[in-house]
Amino acid sequence: MKLALSAGALLAAALLSACDGGGTQSNRLNPADVAGVYQVCDLAFTPSNAILPAAQLLRTVVDTTPAAGRPEPTLAVAGNGTYDLVYTRQSDNFLQQLRGNVTYGQEAIVLDLPSGGIPAELLLPRGLTLRFSDAGGKRLTASAGDNFAYPVSRADYARAAGVSEEGLQSTINGSLLVSLSTGACG
Image (cartoon, rainbow, N blue to C red):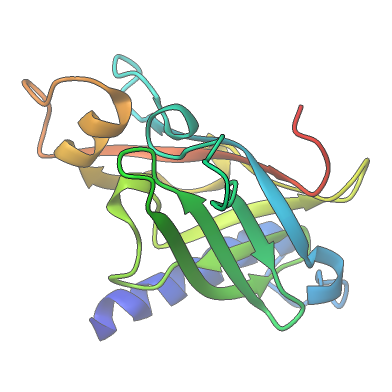
């Protein structure tokens, strides 16, 4: 387990270095800049193999219109450098919650996803780099070029993408497309 955490920490440091010139700049984002409750506007896993369809997780895994008393999918970034991802799972209407730490770079943050605590159904990497923008409301985004490709299990991908496991390799490499906003999605 320690090896996985160390590798995740190294990956997060490398990603932040790439985003902010090595981390020596004094104008890093600070927790107050990024803090807020973000709506999950887009969440899709895109396989590196272009023949395979993207897994549109807001259509297949996350309930975007949960029953009364259940939260809509949100990411709360706190001023103390932590986050809380909450959503209702479509398959059983169970509340899902993921908590972790945030690392701040010049233009991006990295969500450190705890080893063993990541719901496999979301097809998330161990560390997720999100670019921050405050033009027209706070936004956090990730596209295929923002994060390294990473593997997910064939079964988890097939379930999320709505395809058969037949003929798929044991793992599917890909990256996450994410769009989060403190304002309206759109």
